[in-house]
Image 1 (tube, rainbow, N blue to C red):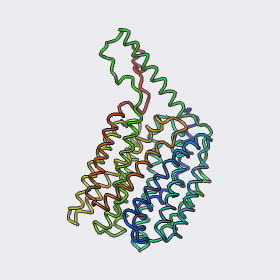
Image 2 (cartoon, helix red, strand yellow):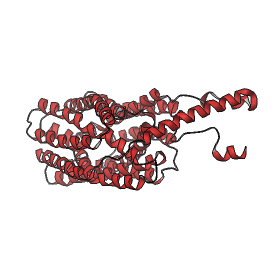
Image 3 (cartoon, rainbow, N blue to C red):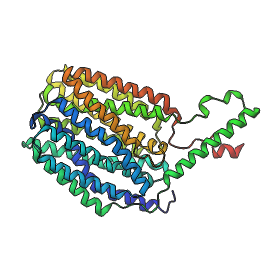
Image 4 (cartoon, rainbow, N blue to C red):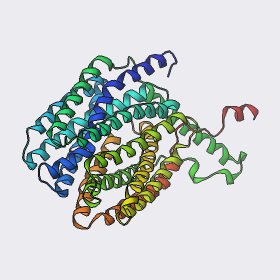
Length: 434
């Protein structure tokens, strides 16, 4: 990207943050509040929680493709962000009027449809605001600052639940926060003048592929050792296996986190404000992960980070299961520490994979990454709640851990062919010396 556009683009990116922070406050608050609200206010159970979140996630899958295609097709991005925030404000207000669990579940499914409308355009705008080597820093900066909004939402939930506000008053507050997000984004968010950075990256990748082919032909002519020829030197990115790894990762995450507030509330008999405090620690871990990637941008090997964070979360899931058997005095410490490291691992993983996805996924299919997240979340929401309800939480932790291991295996098989930059057989310096 031309340097003339970068100062404007970075200021443009920073101006989003106020609106998105208010939206993320809503998401942070709802992440813990909704399962407890369904069980304690509407009289539902874990199966209802799983069905509600699974249906919303399933509805979000085709919606993610649709919004991603639409924003790339029209070349307009701001309007879909505004539409998402305004729709969520209206739907959350309708939820405050709902008294039956079935109607609540159906309305929440619509929340999944309109929530995802802002995700593909947001990813595209961040990618277009910086050159490819700075994508990780751009995504990390955005996620860190909006993660701060998520953290504020959990903190708000902790304070309100400490004073007994575990009812529809929180839903009113969430509706109002999204209305504020709409108003601030309407003022601050703007579409960039030119959209071309992802096209340049695709051209660079194509050129790199041709260069590698020419170099292998040169080697095969006998000018170089045949031993230098390797099967891995010229391979098409194994995108399907990479996507399978993403699916397993988010499936495992959803299985773990959907019933987790109920685990702390019922199984460990913790009060609502303590449950919010534990998830506040997890949000802090996410924030640390985003900051780490942002600070180390350009000096990290994102391929290794994706694989390592997947296997780390598998180990941490098993470690969390010890909270079931630990004495009460150790339960809080163990849960808090484990959730901090789970959050750090997710922050690093999310930024690394979203940067890779913007490089690998072609233009017009910007919603594929969010659709994979939605598919994993949709299946995991119901499976996690079903396992916890019928078999208990120990099988849930073990299942989640095994799925993280499967995601690690998928990444290990595919990620070796994926790089953050185009790799040429000879660097500029090497070609000059030869």
